[in-house]
Figure 1 (cartoon, rainbow, N blue to C red):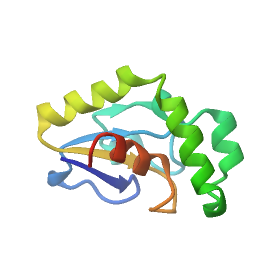
Figure 2: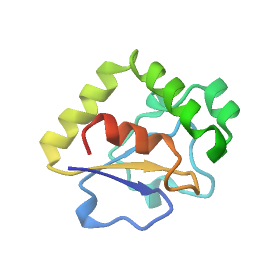
Figure 3: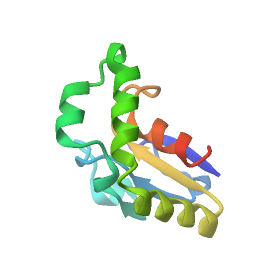
Length: 114
């Protein structure tokens, strides 16, 4: 089972395997507080795409298309996430954005079949 969660929310035993999918480390979060199993920063959107999007909901549809195109070249990373989900029976994709509906974790979770 794949879920998504802001990294600023407290760790929960039901989180299972916790994977940060942001390219940048979230502000104000210590490594201890993050309690990550893995930081998969290279699965995050490219710097150019991230800066263009700027978490503007009006750009969401176009961002999804562009990010999904980037993810086509990252099949090995998506497979690694699928394997972690199988191994732990629970995978939580962590992100730092304030917007819970318009961020890369939403798209990755959809691709993983969540």
